[in-house]
Length: 119
Image 1 (spheres, rainbow, N blue to C red):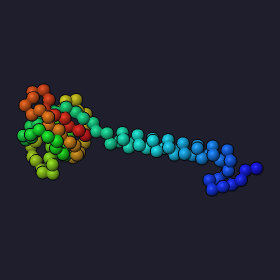
Image 2: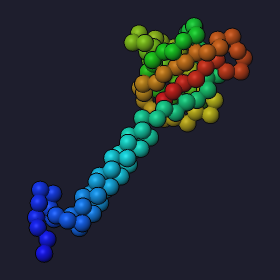
Image 3: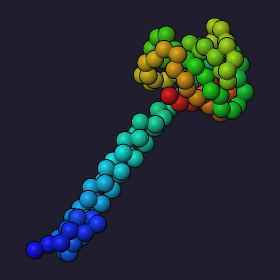
Image 4: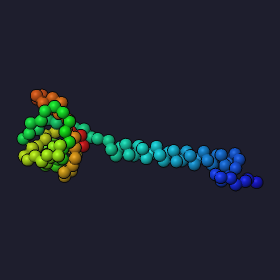
């Protein structure tokens, strides 16, 4: 007959049950980390041009809305409201109204790509 202890049943059976419980909680924790990590992963897309505003090289926080295929209207950059500013992207399929994004300008004078937008 088994005796009851602090963790339940004492002996080999109790040790095995503790290991199983710890394994289940460990798996739940790892799955939670993977889920949170995938939820906060940023999607990045190439920026072809920015119309209506001249930005130097650097990283900017912006608020954008999708207007058309590969065309986003910029509402504000680094907390300052802007008007008539558009970002033209390549193969960007993100939909949203007033979405916070990061814009990284790396090569202002390039004809191919001037930077990256992170959703």
